[in-house]
Image 1: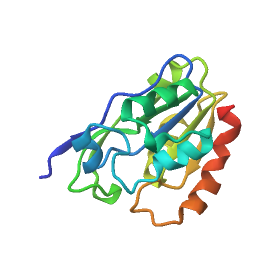
Image 2 (image 1 turned 90 degrees about the vertical axis):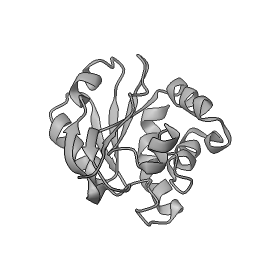
Image 3 (image 1 turned 90 degrees about the horizontal axis):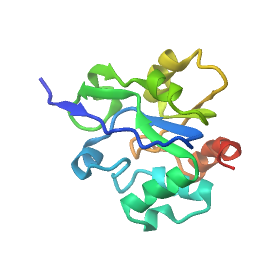
Length: 164
């Protein structure tokens, strides 16, 4: 049996307009206790490009503060699961996060973006009938999802209208 991986607390506040949901933090993120800590994960460059800010150059706390200041929140669709390694395909016995409870607690929420296929499949099951909130599927920022950064940037640009 693999050890149970436990995700992080949500990074949100009452001004969160866009909630980005991953599946479950990978080994590098869990070890660093930081969202998207793997050095080849393109999340921070993607968000920096969307926000027009050099997020990768900032400290982790400053990155989170900049996201919140721009109405962006982070969390994962899986609260905990058994997993060897970091691949979504290795996830076993997932326990869902309380996505509906979180979404309902965010008065300004306008969009939920799923970072990757597993996040989208699981998250849409929970949030499918959420009223007044766009559900957006994004290609994974993970290095395991081998697509050119420019291609990911183009796909993630769909978030721009919700960020202004």
